[in-house]
Image 1 (tube, rainbow, N blue to C red):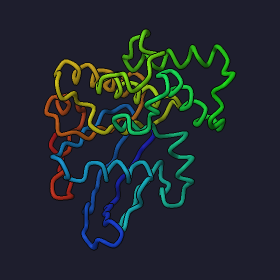
Image 2: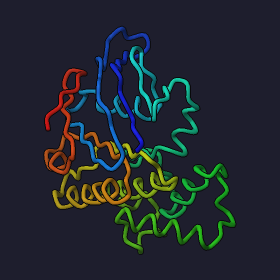
Image 3: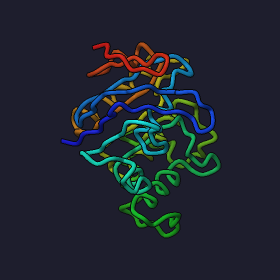
Image 4: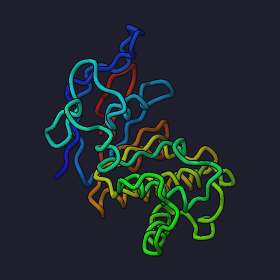
Length: 228
């Protein structure tokens, strides 16, 4: 079983002197869907940054399977072990949907940028990833910039799954306009946790998304509180 642990983890932005997160203590395990609920600017993105190794603690630590992230190759950790869903921030808007997924596959395999000449099995795998994320087949050759916000989140999820990660970190999967879209996305994430034994950690202000959690935490004023 894979475990990701925040051990009295605190974080202050460099030069600000203001502590954003304070002594977070929580253990995340594979096969579970965790939701961290909080309002805007409560520190949710910073929690994901610590868990992904994009930021490091100013005190305390983050451990993956007993190893301190500060002592790991965090680039390799992100490319091989962690999938990050960040509302399309890492997608190439002018590129086709399938090419974004293929690029993620290349990066995770160490063949950065080598999309040209990708063989048929890899294209089939990319289509399968899009299907798992709930992206309709006819959208695969559309440019990302032509998609709706909800469709972009799903493409981002397909890209995050390219490395078959142990951990999925998801920044607000909720749909602003459609509760059904939120429920559908959370159903997919729950399946990935329960049927594929992934550790799925979601941050969101959405009460609908929170209802899907195996374990629900609240984040307020930089502190985590166990809810259920």
